[in-house]
Length: 174
Length: 175
Image (tube, rainbow over all chains, first blue to last red; front, top):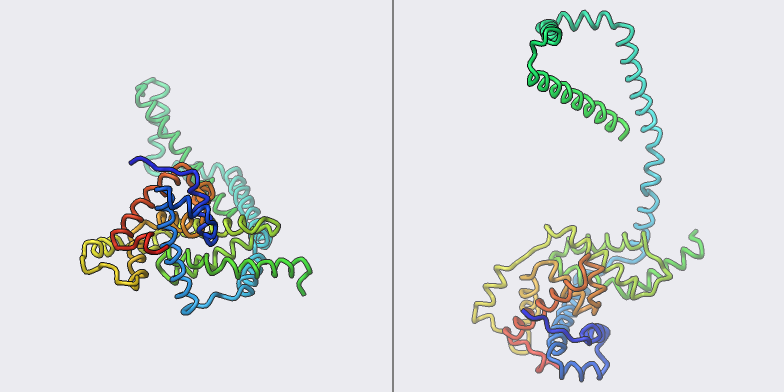
């Protein structure tokens, strides 16, 4: 479909919306096929608007401007900046709690290293797995493919651990 | 006790509201087709407007700004807006739906034609043919480019004018 354009179109529409009193625009619209359609659609749309406005004026009065003004002011009073300022101490205490638990965990690992080691060693299968890996490494019995799989598994475990730690930290800091 | 500048802004708002609120509400109501949703969008538009308005800007600019806010809110709520293409199609095919003499059926006929359009197209028609905004102004309001608006409006005008003529509403007899 070819788009028929008239350079007067914007002016005609604007003129009609503002009351359409300019005779030059009406004359042009009578001669120009594009603006004739513009005029037709505008005229019917404006009638449609008037019907809506009349119906609403009768059935549903507008809210008072003062009401909206006060609502906007109330909204402004509890703006985001104020909310952030109010929540600041809570975020601060959450951060402190996170650091204390991280430092406590590190201290626990350092102080009770031997106990943790023996606890891990007592887990069924874990000791055997570590021994097998150590032996395989020393004797070269582990194939390059197995080594690659192992490294990938360790890397994946590391990534999962990092994701877990950062997500905990993010939820802590809000 | 409000300060002098606040009181002045309040007066400016009151004057602006008296002029713009009825037409803005008409636009939102016709595009949404739902009174409750239209009321929500109307109120939210003014609250957003009041948060960011610059009172030293020209009134046309302020009016375009609040229409832009409303247009964006309508887009955000597009899923809640009724589309009624089936009803309109039925009416177009029905020979009994010919317009009543003296255009007593204008409201239902226009409403059916209008409701059959997508909410975006209703907005475009209203902003262009009721409010008289230029292609560039509408493009800025709807977040589209002016060339697309030109093509979209051309197609809409063609089909809308044809539908109006099909229902017996012509320019010649009206003006």
